[in-house]
Amino acid sequence: MKKNNTVNNIGMSLARADIIAAEKVLTELQTNNLKQLKSIVAYHIGQASEKMIKLQIYRADVLTDNKSMYTHNLLSLANYGLSLGIKIYIPKYFKNKLQELTDWEVKGRYDVHYVVRIDVLTRSLKEVKEWYDKLWNDGYR
Image: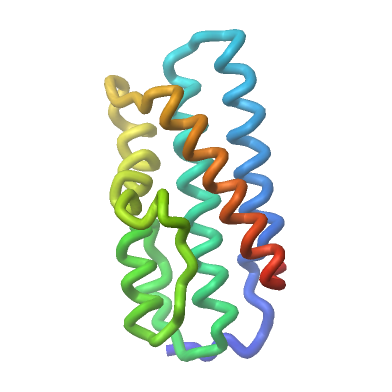
């Protein structure tokens, strides 16, 4: 177990980079209807979400277990944070979709037939940007 009394390498700038990447690829998708671009957008939305959950855990200054933190499963991360007594902010839109977001990362990379609808991606990107803004306004950096 490790106490997070120093600044962790996970920061809001990394989440922001994923959001920017998702925005750029979504814009490209609107002019170039290459189906696989949807997977790239979905991946970066999931990555931004993962970083924002992990950042909240790391900044709580509690003992953490690296094994529990070194996962990409968003539901597991959120539950781990809650088990440590950390209040994790997750937007209402994503609360029941954490496993789905996790699946986007894995299935989007390895299953060539897996796609996420563009309207779902557009809404999810809007929601993840608002999540980022809320954490930023709450002082997360």
